[in-house]
Every structure is written in C-alpha cells, then in structure tokens.
Length: 371
Image 1 (cartoon, rainbow, N blue to C red):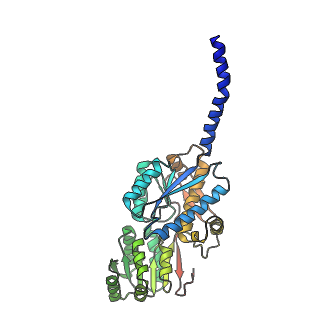
Image 2 (image 1 turned 135 degrees about the vertical axis):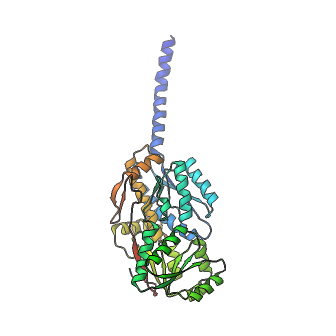
Image 3 (image 1 turned 90 degrees about the vertical axis):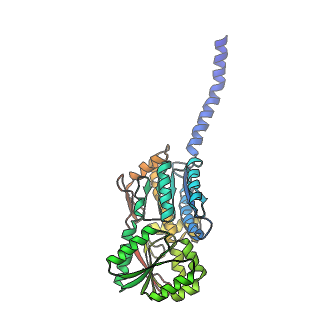
C-alpha cells in the first residue's frame, strides 16, 4: 500500500520536477553576459564619458540586435564615479559582487586605470581597454589595445621635429605623470629644447608664464579639469597659445581639437580616425552608431570604446556558456591574431598589449583634418 502511494507521488511530481529543472536551465541559458564600467558621468569629464559610453553602446546594441552571444544578451552596466577614487573603488566592487560582471572596460586616464587594474587583480575580473598607455598597466589581468606612452610620445615628437620645431613648452597638470615623463624624455632625445610648465588654477598666471617663454610649439598633457578650465577661459587661451599645438591621444582629445580649432594641431591616435578612415571597421562602426545611438558616438573615443567591446565579444564567443572572469581572461589570452575590419590585434598568454598602432593626425588652422 505504502509503495503504491509513493509510486503515485513520483508519477505526479516527476513532470513538475522536470519543468522546474528545465526552467532553471533556461534561465541560466538566458542570463545576460555582463560587462561593467565606472565612468565620471558628472563633472568636467562628462563630455568624454558620454562619447565613450555612446561608442560602447553602439556595439552592445548591434550584438543584441543580432541575437546576442549564444542566445544570451550582452549587457553593459555603467556606474558614475564623478572622477572620485573612493566612489570608483565602491563601483568596481559593486560591479563584481552584485552585477557579477565578466570584465571591467573603458577606464579613463592613468590614475583611474591603475586603480582599476589593482582591483581587477584583487577581484579576479579582467580589465579590457584602458584609456591609458602607462607601462605600469602591463599586468596579468589587463588587456590593452594601445601602445605604451613611450612609443606614442616618440611618434609625436618625431612629427614636431619633421616640421622644424626646435623649442617648445610642455604644459602638464600632473593628471597623467607617466605620460609627462614620456613626453619629456622624447623631447630631450630629439634635441628639442623645452620648458616644463605646470597648469595652475589661476589661468592668468599660467598664460603669463607661457607668454614669457614664447615657444614655437605648445605640447599639452592635460586632464579633464584643466581642459574645462581652458574652455571657461577660451578667448584668453586662444590669444596666447602659439600657432602649433601637439598632444598625445587621450579621452579628451576631441575636446582639445575643438577648443583650439584655429591652431595647427598635431596629435597621435591609437585607432583609425573616423573622420577620414575608409577601413571596413570604421564604416561598420558608423553604421552601428547611426542605427543604435546617434552621431555623438562617432569620435576617436567612441571608436576606441567600440573596439574594446569588440574584443570582449570575440573572447566571449569562444569562452562557452559557463564563462566567468578568469575564464574570459583565458579566452582573451588565446584570441591570437584578429582582423577587425582592417585593424589588426593580437593577444597571447605573453602578450596582453594587443595593438601597437599609432598614427599621426594633423588638423589645420582652418579646422580641416589634413591626415
């Protein structure tokens, strides 16, 4: 008798148990693949963050419109840190522990990226696509798509030498000290006499010192706060700045070229310039931006963020359904050589700097991009 009751209960419960197991499996299959970023969405760096976020969103929306990755949606969680290191640390812990992100992406600037790299190691979550070429970022959990600061600085200074610059001012604000050191070393090695000048909160004092030196060229290495100061005193700066300006690629490069639009501006770029490049990658990026986001994504910063997520997506496709942070890091290491529409990258267990691409841009005093 008891055995018959047990058999009846098994018959009744079996379909329910099967349905429950299938629903759990289905939920696991449909759980999104989450990436995370902590950006200054408020404050002086907001315009930069907006371009970065727009470029990343163009790729995320394109992937999801195509069915996701193995049937799972790609999700990008963005938290605001206002440029504050304590908020950034809290955000990164939250992204790892509450949102269970598979990777951190798109940190802005040397200090933010060094902090993110340290927490990436602690939390066992890879960092993909730092907007910094600091040599200290060569770490096991960091995957970069840009050359180091030294290589970029040497390329920029070689261009200054080629156009006959013999004397310059190097204006920095301490926001990215490794870049300032790389620029100073490159200028010295090229035989260009330079006067180091520190950006001051009193814009007039900086301008007076700049005028006293009267350089042939001004080499800039400024963070968002200093660029915001230049913008607020635009007329005074445009009157004092020499006819030739140079800068390394940075999240604020688009803002800088717009601000000093009546100067000859030489700059480095670590991605193809979307204004002039005809690479398939750039045409694809522009189509995705126009379809899913809007024109605000189409910038050097937007394309860089788009590329960072392209690399993440390629690794996720190869990692399988049960991927976690260390698993994604392993997939990134084993990507090998990738052609992303005319832009080549290569990763391996010993090579976490996926690209050494540097190109020189030149914007004329008429505002037109010459190359």
